[in-house]
Image 1: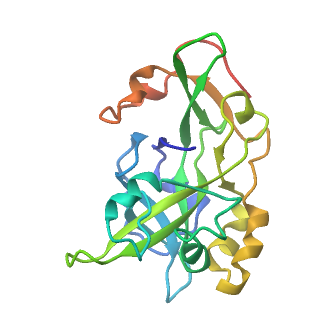
Image 2: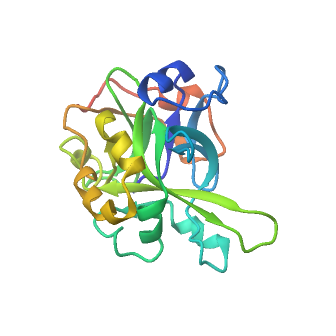
Length: 233
């Protein structure tokens, strides 16, 4: 499961990672250190005219277009890559509404065998650069108040590093696969499963952080500071 992440990178670093079509993101785009479900998050989806990624803000927690109650999105923050092709909540989005979710780190909680508490870890690239998570987006319009756009994060099994912390991790796409993920036609959606794999073992590192991150009300830079000298990766 991926239930919290960070995005504090400069817009210039995001543009180095993903070739935006739109320049709507300001250079002082707000840094976020504790992004949580039901909050508005940045995604990049394919723009229809120029076929390039376009930044859009949507709510985290996918609400299927057929749902009667948008509260279903509260438990749709992740989609398992192994079953996304067949799940009614996600299969249409996999065919028609894929996106990139930029991040520069994510949190996961580890429970040691001899402890009753969980230790949060911040997992990130060693160079602290951003990366793109595979996501799906959806548009729900049953309230009469206009469309509600939402998203979910795809997850997969752990790589060697994540296996020390948790049994799942977000799908981190390689840069060379961004265009295919965004633009593959619907009849090729099933073949995208080959992209939904764990990140290379040396792609990430992790360190323990304060349990202050447990509160989604807190969003400040010190949440990613290590609490000791231990490192993974």
